[in-house]
Length: 389
Image (cartoon, rainbow, N blue to C red; front, top):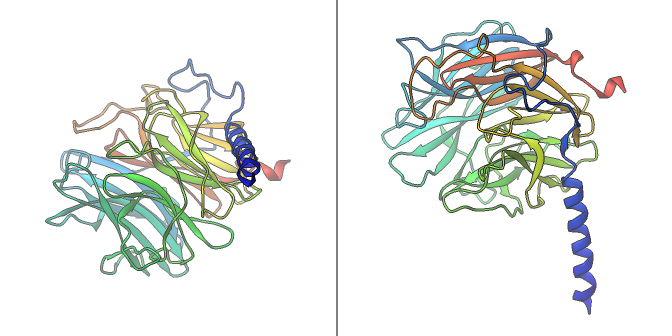
């Protein structure tokens, strides 16, 4: 008898959650999908553009996965670099820094280099007080099914770094997976992220109450969609709604060319089953977050194909309907350069953006044709929505 009562209640709850999830969408008429270069958006004078790294005959020709951090007034950018190809055995993690809020950048330096058994890619940053933590994803060479771990190194000056150590789970075991986005700090101080666990790349949200982000990670309750070597959902990022709901966005490897999303109402300990949203996506890594006033943002290529342009900033006051769009980079010939060098998986366009809020700006780092690294910045005063209501 009890089951007959409980099951309809659970079904009603699931349907209510599903109905809420489906509301994650763009405002009607926000983008013109027939305009493949700009989506009908105009350039904004509020967006300032800068070059972090440009390839040359004497440099690496592959660059992707730019991640930014502001530490002690200096802006840092890390990315994965290789002579030619994506995820080749000679892939290393480069970083550069800017002392003038992104206008000019230092020459790239190694943050992590490959070993005899591993190559490495950018995992993200975490700033806590006087310590800058860099997360490095290490991948075992020669494996048919890609699998990796997450290491970390720390610095107090952004120049000298500690010995690499492995990120740990709550039981003291190593995290047998890779973090591909910065940990997101909730108002409680808890850190939320997602790891792509071994074997293969099977995503699961994780959380920790260790403010350093180096240990204490727990797997959340999450029912994703596995597809053999990897899950359908990959490369997530997250933002927070004003009611405390965490929204985690995913790239959909099933090629719906729509973002997927899961939702948590208990500080990341459990998540709804991911659903396909109405927000177009180029099936690529995107980023999301919140401005200081709570406005939710996404940076992505909101097109219904593999085309990785234009690059657009989407904004929402309620974290449900994204009703403002700012063109960051278009697909027009005078703005999107031709690829200079050949290489494996070198997609034309703007790949793997990552945004941070710092010093009165929203900074966004990204790659251009997977061979150059660029960033742009926008003053927060031109973006925040809640204060204008």
